[in-house]
Image 1 (tube, rainbow, N blue to C red):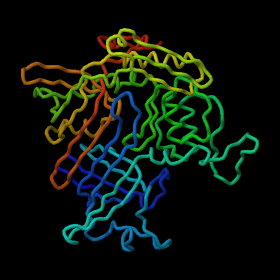
Image 2 (cartoon, rainbow, N blue to C red; image 1 turned 30 degrees about the horizontal axis):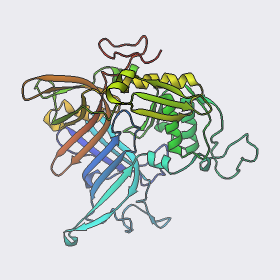
Image 3 (cartoon, rainbow, N blue to C red; image 1 turned 90 degrees about the vertical axis):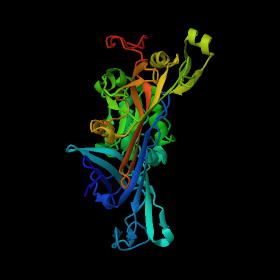
Image 4 (tube, helix red, strand yellow; image 1 turned 45 degrees about the horizontal axis):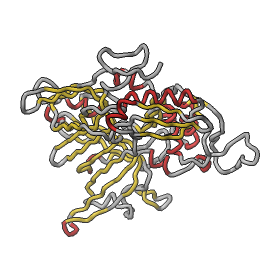
Length: 420
């Protein structure tokens, strides 16, 4: 059963004790009544990097010892004489507000440390969980399936899945093929159609590395969404998707918009890249630089090998990237809100995802107001049921500095042409 966090929001924490990790339909056990606090952390540092594994920590009351994996009374599989509290069981944290339910995190159990405190008068267990990136990181393509059509490599009996074949295909088809090879559930995917083709990849590739190679070749974003879906967004997403193009919420300290607790700004050279030298496998190096940026800030380069099929695709991608990275701008790095300050914050805190566009207005002590439109790069929830506190933080990247595609420009935004 869900547990009331306050009069507006109910929290539900569930564990798939009776299901295998990749079962499409999970049999969840509700443990909400034992939750004391939890944190979730998902995303990336800024728009230049790749998304990391999302994680959650859930502190549960263990006063009756029910979450101790060594006990045989609760969550116990008597048929097989083992605890159901096992690593890689699916974990889901969700919240309900105004009759709508939002998943905040879905992942897989990592560790289950049991602690006895107050000289044994109390006990707690911290369930630590990581999203599917951990599973992708743990294997390579040729250990996950068998291949057809290649003499000497049928590997009959190694796996029952039809796996990966060497071929050239659309980036999104490659992502789908890799996820199929892993056996990742089809109802846990959100894969947008790609815009470029990719070459074959080494069968010895780590699964996560292989997926990230496709991400680079497409100039895409690949991550695990809050509800546990392997999400692949093509290079056009941030320049055309409604949530990325239109402001989804405005935050300020002026009293006229949604309130925030803290906000931070920065201006530095950490996000400047003004020289790109990228080479596809068996291709020619594609080079582009911004002479003015190099003169002002010295050369700050990016060198990569990609699995693109054509040199022109590589050039098109680095043209798009340099339009976004060659000049420093004042950045709103981080936004923190307390949703209990204003009920209008709840839908923002519960429903926002990476790439959503928001606006932040800042009135400084002198009375000067600055504002910017930003894209969300990471999200963190810190929730304590005992103290009834909830903090939501997001790291942000500038949206207004992005380049534009011919025919899709937004008035007053983006001064650089990216690609057509």
